[in-house]
Structures are given as structure tokens and as C-alpha cells.
Length: 390
Ligand SMILES: *Cc1c(COP(=O)(O)O)cnc(C)c1O
Image (cartoon, rainbow, N blue to C red; front, side, top):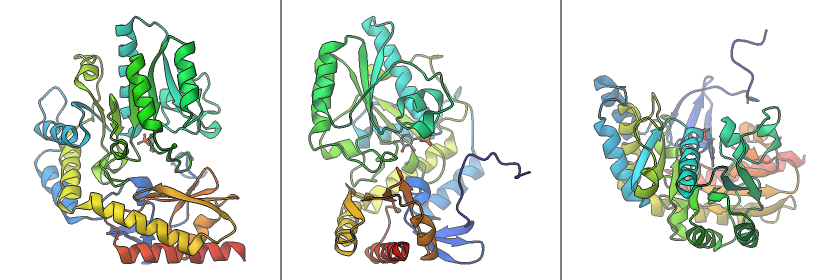
């Protein structure tokens, strides 16, 4: 009998007891440099004083009331999210997949308005949008989908970054209502599209009255050096989903939309018992305020450049490394072979990383990482890589 927890994760044999900044301490007292942030979640590192204080204060007053009551913390967070994203209104959920479900439901209501009965949403190769039935159907991974058929219908898949394919689809089909995409693919291997792709998709969506729905669950909340990655190209989506870093470790997510699209939801059309509770919203607001107060957006751009430059310098001549890419503190090192064994070797160097699509080393350290810690990260990664050869 393997214990009472369902076996959905291949686990790494280190258990953590506490953390501080970019450092995690295992139950046996070893210190690890965290270059994974609980998969791009712990934006402010571990035990950030502002977050600790907000959690304690809000928990001591009120953790939860139902959404039947007005929730001032939710309204304040929605105001802040509108200010940083340029979108108008927020629906609050508890996870990325749920935020995407809200987005997909909005696309169905958009279809109703257009008189389309069996609408299609464009999604892309290598996409990852979550593990619920609709979001796994939108994802492109045999591992994520296999065994869960029948998949949810209404998705048409195109090559990521191929604007001609999207243009051709627009000429072919009249049942498309939206495009759902990551501005930089995360699980798909830290893959940015060609420059200008997002701008071109926006223009096509405008011409066709399709919703541009950006999944910024991994790229958002400062991860790439802007609040949201679409802001690097000055592109404004109709719908944007945000989660992971938003609560600095406390589960909270949002589906943001323009006033027009948000208006499709009326009382009773969507909901969530836990979504947007006072605790989650107070912490998320504090996370955004802290990113601002500490000047983290320009700092992430700087550290990201430092990280990529150091990786180029130290690993660029490694024959196994084929590409070093990304934006801000979302960086991938693509190799020409499976790199899964590197995760264990990195642990021996007291470094936490992970590998996506088998061959891409993913580095998503906390946004607060210092330049000395970036140097330590690269040194430890290089040491782990040199052991992989031996
Ligand atoms: C992590 C992730 C999701 C799913 O988020 P959950 O909180 O695990 O449901 C969806 N889209 C992207 C791009 C992600 O990185």
C-alpha cells in the first residue's frame, strides 16, 4: 500500500521545512537555491515579510465570506489588476485552469452573440492550458490528454507562431470565435513566438471579431519584466488569465476582460465558492504592490539579461546546448537530448530546477533574486551539467 496520497506526481526525494528569499531549507537542514519557485508561483521568494504580515493580519480578521456578500479586498484587487493590465473587469478563481475555464465560457457566450452554434477556439501546438477537461482539450500533450477521451470539442489547433496558417483559417471557416494562446509557451518548452506574431494575431482578431484570449498564467505578474508579457509588444487582449505568481504562493487566479466581454457574464452565469476570498485577494493585492514598491519589473529585466548572458558565457559552448532563450526571469536552456536526469544532479549541487518537454531546462527563480544569486544559480547549473557527462 503506497500511502494515502494519489500517485499523480513523480516526486523528487527532498522535503522542505522552510524558506527565505530564494533559499529553501530541507527537513535535514540543507539549503537549496530555488530556481523553480514552486513552478513560477513564489514570485517574491519564500517568507517575504510583506506577504507574511498580510496573511497573518487578514487571517486574524476574516478568511472567507461567500461571494453573496460584497468583498472589499476583491474590489481593491480588481482595481489594481485593471490598472496594471489595461483590462476592465476581473472574475476571481483559485487556479490557472479555472481562470481559463472562465475565459472559454466567455468565448462560448461571444459565439451566442454572433449567432454561432458550434464555435471553435484556435489553440496551438505545444500549448498548455491546464488539467480540467476543457483546458486539457485545449492543451497539446499526449501525456496530458491520453486516457481522458472524449475530449471537449470546439478547438482547432494550428502551428504556434504561424500567422499564415491563422490567416488561411480565417478565410476557410466562419465558426471561429477566439484565439487562446500563451505569449511565451511555458510547459511547451519556454518558447516565444517569432517577433510580431502577437501583434499580427491581434490585428486578425480585430478584423474577424475573434476574441484574443491570452493565457498569462505563467508569463504574468512580472515574470518576463512587464506586468504581462503582451505589454512587450504593446498588445491588448480581450481576455487575459493570470494565476501562478499572483498570490506569491497563496492560491488565487483571475480571468480579466474588457467591459464588453466581461458583460457576457450575468448573475448566475459563472461562480466559485472559494474564488476571490478576502485572504487570497488581500495577499494578491500586496503581491502586486510589493512588485511595484521594490521596483521589480526593471530589476527582472536586468537580472534576466544577466542570467541569459551568463548562461551563454558558461554553457553556450556546451555541445549539448542548442538554444538559450526566454524573457526576464523565464528562461529555457534547450538541449539536444533528454535532460530529466539533470534535476537530480542539480539537487546534489543544492539547486532546484525542472525540465520541460524532456530537453528544456526551465529557470524561473523568484523575481527578487539578487545578481550574486544569479551567479550562484549558473555556477551550480554548470556543475550539475558537468556531472551529467561523467
Ligand atoms: C500552470 C499553467 C496553467 C494551469 O494552472 P493551474 O493553476 O495548474 O491550474 C495554465 N496555463 C499555463 C500557461 C500554465 O503555465
